[in-house]
Picture (cartoon, chains in turn blue, green, purple, brown):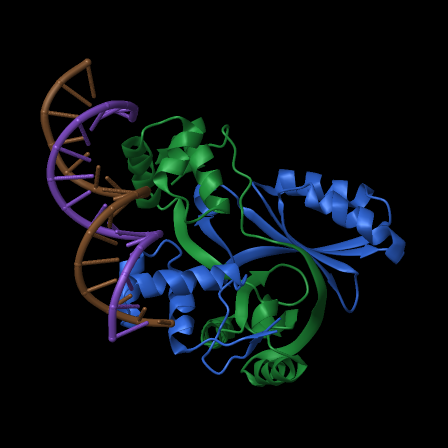
Length: 159
Length: 159
DNA sequence: TCTGAAATATATTAGAA
DNA sequence: TTCTAATATATTTCAGA
């Protein structure tokens, strides 16, 4: 099944990607539609699951999360992947967990308050069943960090 | 300067991290305060910059973004970092760009529609001044992907 | 800071084109 | 799908504790 989105839907989505709490009348002005029309479109976009969620993004620095790191993990034996992923999901300091091609089977993006808590978490990861090696890259500075998708009019969406 | 957040602020922030468009009366019920009190607290949290932004998160799959990859880039000579970062910032397929410790000077998180567009972007990166090497890890599957911070009551925030 | 009541703004529903 | 008008909700303002 394939959704068809027009220019207006794209504009609405692009505005919501940047302004998640935007009011319907603000969006109505932008797309030159009435408020009920915008409401109806938003409802459909949400219903179809095109919008996964709305989130407030907090300022990491102001909450004293000083360490961001990428950890490459080599988990030996794919039969151990599920238990690894389960461990990961229990730890909120893990912002991302992906299985990847190339060296290492998984990459984690981790955020902690300081080097001490990072080191502690790293040790924990290394203690998990199947974890044979890790390699960490600590972030020194971040220039861009977003989840905004570059969607366009010509984009055909599916499923 | 140091902010002092109480249990109620934390609850509000945690709810907004998961439900960015939550209404004030819903939050008021959760924290057992009146709506004006919740409004006032939200206003302050935003004003202090603790909340950086509110965003709608779109479903990558439904928009046919099939490729997510991490690219390690080695940029030779730190005097070339600024031009590299500038290039990066012009490309919306780059979701993240960080300078890091260890091998490679930067890591990019990139999202494209398909392998073709990824390959094209990778070639472009390799053509930028100062880029001497890249190493890519393509994401096979993602188990967790969030920007939610694990904030708690005891957290002392600063600045 | 908080609350409740009033005023205002925003969102939803109904009905027609 | 869209609109306008009517209704319902939500938010803000403000007086008072």
